[in-house]
Length: 418
Image (tube, rainbow, N blue to C red):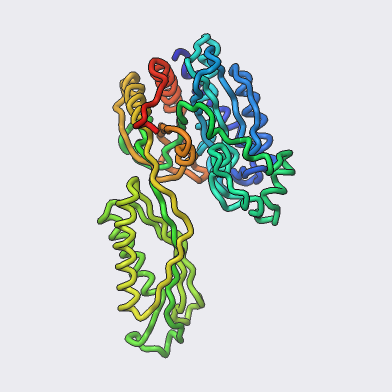
């Protein structure tokens, strides 16, 4: 791929340009079915058409562009990511994975390079779930797994999902038409910033994703007995906060012991007064692993340990599961082709799993998936300090181009890759 630096700079500049479509003037915030979502789709559509693609918006508000194969009945490779952000987020998470492949297609079109498969680039309208509280709405529509009851979901202003779609000039009753589940799909490929520090620690610009971690989340309630901080002897207390503190430490220790990641990210104390023994504590647990079996074994150990702590502390504990997602493996063929594509650039291929969720894990329900991570500064994501380099972008574009040319030599997936 020649003149890659110019294309890399173009990608970098376009990510900056899309950052202007934000609901907030103070920070990055672009949510599903907003005016800013519409403006972003419009701009991305223009870039797709400039690159030699024809573009359309589907019935769920996802934006698409197709680079047509000369073979009419050829299968389709989908490449893409999401265009929405979290509040106070960065400008590359998701967005980079839509903008970068457009520039690669532009290069191919300018050099009259065609493939024995159609290439569809998609910008999903919702991955983060920050407006309606349910994640992956864009890709769930594409997999045909949209749920009718979602029409009643509401945002902070009380606007329902059905109403928001109507304001966006969409008809929620037509969402089923966005499904690609019955199409002849070669696979789905996603490029994403790592959102972690591994590649930077290894001094590598890119890495191969082996799988996307399966996650479970819980709200946990610890109930003790509130009392006056000066009159209840230490030995007679049922302090929910002290018990919770022991539980948080146990979660950390067991996660390390069983090689999973577990996070207590939210904690609410009641009555939350300086001179009152805490009677109730609610806290969250997020536990993830690339292996569902490993995660669930570690979770069982954590549940047993927390029960023992509650017993010895004289408090009760209640668990409520709020989320569950299975671990999702990337197709062996994609991993193999990525290894070869990276080695073509004289870079050591490193394989790692993703601890974050992605659209790819949803699209895996209808076709094989592959993922490439790109280094991000400090491993920072979901934050205004999210940062990438033009140099790493250039490497990523070359690796994607290499992948496409290698896949063109054998544009099929075996049964093991589904």
